[in-house]
Image (tube, rainbow, N blue to C red; front, side, top):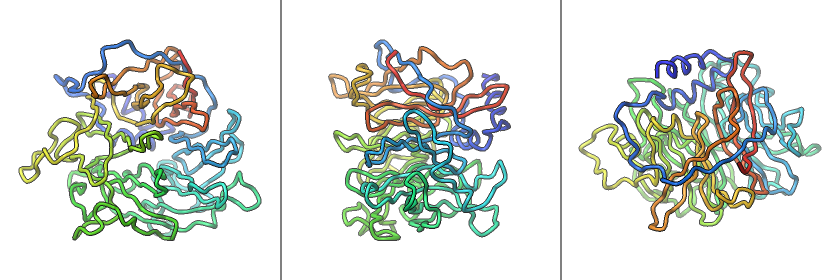
Length: 416
């Protein structure tokens, strides 16, 4: 374990240091002694897969999105302010979106300019609108940041380029720790935009957790209608008529819902909530539900609070301790045919090169199954995102750490 601790400290000083800090600060990577998984991994053979390198990248990729425009393009988000086009297994030489062309060059370790997520409008093929969640300077030439979700459009003359001048702010979040609490935005099957916002104290011991307070956005999943800017509130949001509650809130009680996705068959939201120092969890996110943070972390009590009744919390469908993984990344359901062993299962990742599958057993209980990478990279592989294209092809992405210089990588997940 001391070796792991030293290695984690080392990653703070590599070229991806600022990105490593985001993940390290999100979860304490050292496992606690005498912890056991309360929801054990399924006692069946692991699923074998291979990783096929698609592309190297100069920066750290965290997300893959495929708009419904029949263009064959996948869009890769990296945290250093860019969105790249992946087409025919090749990264285009010029980024589709480069935030630094708008906000100017930043210091290499600055959190300003980090792009967390992108979401393409359901009618992107005709209206060319997309949305970006990123850290922006709170003021011109300020070192402080705010978290912004903005609307952009692609260039009228070149669909492979974004029009940075088209930016229209949708929603802005401010606060002392907001720069490390961005996560994901995505359109649901209902056409509304969902936004997850963390409630991580960013090592600030004076920070007061806000996720149980509906007057704050922290630790929530939001749901808004962006078809009329800046946005409107869907009438069926659960807290529209609740006094002192933000009507944008769809669900709450999360520490950091890093990645969530919609099961295309059931429409349910599956999300990976990053733990502090005990457990990682997978949740089915339901309307108005409370997932317990900071009173609960996974299945464990994290912060005793006699005013809260833990029976009111919605339990995760699966958890694991830091003996099993370090930091949950999340994933999506797989309905492709190329890897039959994964079909109809929720495929997800943990930061330190771990892959899993989740499915219900014959008794209706969710069971976790290990997904073994039979051709692991020689260098340590830190997974930052999972994705799936329009052909049900699975991807994992992140970065490799080696002595000669760290590099971003995108892999296809193939049958083992």
